[in-house]
Length: 422
Image (cartoon, rainbow, N blue to C red):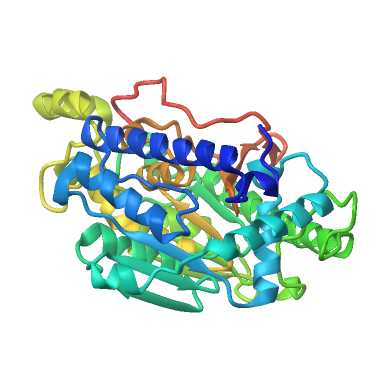
């Protein structure tokens, strides 16, 4: 199907009918997901830029779901012409223009935007007269306008938009180096690193420092060898949010408050890296079972062992301070918001339960998958936010080489060895 600018011209009656049918069928699928499936939140991504379309959406939702389903309209406006041009350039990496010449694609997208502008009715008066919640974001967060924002989810959505950015940066996630308790097979605790753990910490420090330098060089080279606006045949569009002052990009290293995590980050130079300890990154607290081996738990607390095995996600360790995965998910929420907000590189040296939650979030996995993700010691996970998703890479530490190997086809998977225990 032709999806050039002409397809979005309202005078093209056949295309208009197709777009309208696609929009409403997609909306019905979303409502089926919420009303008849397991969905709690749906995002209807369509060009709802006319008052008629927004009225049609509300009529369809109210007809099927009644007044109980909350609706929040989100409008993004670019008044800064250079920012608009930049965002158009980012559009070229999306599915509409995949594998097409950037110059021709940008010219076509500009025509599409011009067509939208002719019929565009901004969110505002009608929505306010009819008490319809909305949030308007101007110039990617320079200014935010909200109306009738009520309830937890709507408030969280606005808070997320306030902290959202597309600055190119790296997020690294790893577990601490091997600890003495790891060697003894004990869970929890606050032991020191083993000799192997210290060796990992030193190798990781060298590797991250090298990756930081290489990343900056790649970004600078990309900027130097592309053009803005693009020229015909230009297939490496730069990220317009990238600053040429790459040498001064900050790099944060966040550890937990536990010794094995703090010691894993101790070799980073304070002048080059901003090292900080955060209690939110601490390992899941095992309550009365802290410091026990899994064999000891199975023999001394057989009932608890079986309860956890039946529902690991919902299970909470008994005793003072005992936690479960749902507690960790709630505890990590502010860390995730900060990672979305910040423009600096960041390395998180944490623990298995926390690493599982962070990786599941950035990979868009289901909550039910969190508790059983395979997340062994000696792995470094690299995440790079992009306009269309997060680029994911994995590296494995090789003690014999004292360095890391890149795993090109690595995918997160469920643990296969004693999954009920880890």
